[in-house]
Image (tube, rainbow, N blue to C red; front, side, top):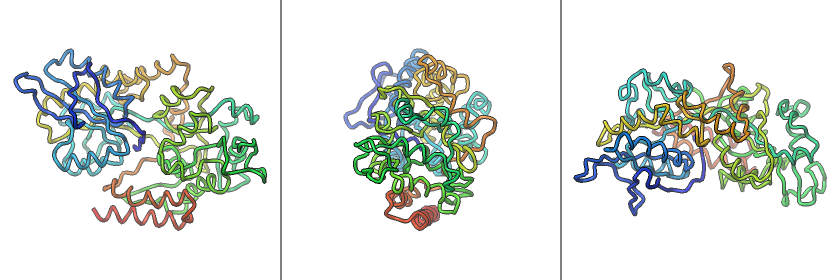
Length: 448
């Protein structure tokens, strides 16, 4: 999840961490001949966190001059395929990021270091409990928590709401429902959608081919849209090692989102959002969308790119209330590393308050180390950005929906995603398409 799907440029960190840049773009681990210097390689997919790592590893190097850390950023779209190939070929980095959906295979195949054994069982006491639980399998923790996505909320364009006569406070009471009498979200989205002539979708003359302002980012976005919608309808995406998103409750939730695109025309066509996972975010940032449902992982992009006043509200409730997904990221140690002691030192640093605080202080993400999280709140508080809504949805033991946790996830996703794209595009009926996608996903699990 990640579920975190950002289109990031591949790169390596600069001179502050004494990066060894190779022409092929592949960073090698080992000791520099005759120097007594060990190189530990780290792989991730987020260039903004990579910038924070740059400063963090510079501080680490000051007290560990015999260890140089090389970092490479692989775009999300290529990350898992590349990692799978590199693990199989024995050339994976010493440390690499892992999310929940890909944990099962990596842990079960013996690819990852046992963190309890490597750093001691007490180390986890300093880390975000939700992330620790998420990455504990068969009683073993398989990574050092680095990021917590918190929950999902609703970014909104203040000017667009004002022009439509909608008080931002109204967003706190909005709910979606398949019962038109109970659906208070659709009327708002209709009021916030406009074509090039300023007409709303409720106008018979509305031109769906010339929309200049969409109301919302309904689409095939697992973390931002699908999982919260399914959870808010009291359903599951997967359960007990099998996929369930074709069952009635999940199908209702996904069908509602599909109708926002193809029937009500208040969200961008799936031909755009299916092809580019960042399309909706970019449309919002460019001033072409009023409401953008997403997580803190997109906050830096909104803050840096939006040239209008914006705010954050709670995500819409569903028939079962607000049920958000929350997703963590860990730094996993390669069990086959040629230098486990140096790798363990870097993992220990990444799991320390000082080491992880650079991530929070940059505002790139919520740190996985609890004591480092205040740096994140201080960063955004200093910029007058209130992030409370992303945490309120998780407060007081609120129900959550988990990201997919089944085996063989790469093959599973490859099996169901094209069918799900067709469902959102309207080229496959919702019930039939979701059932086909679910069957394809479960067949991929069985094929492992």
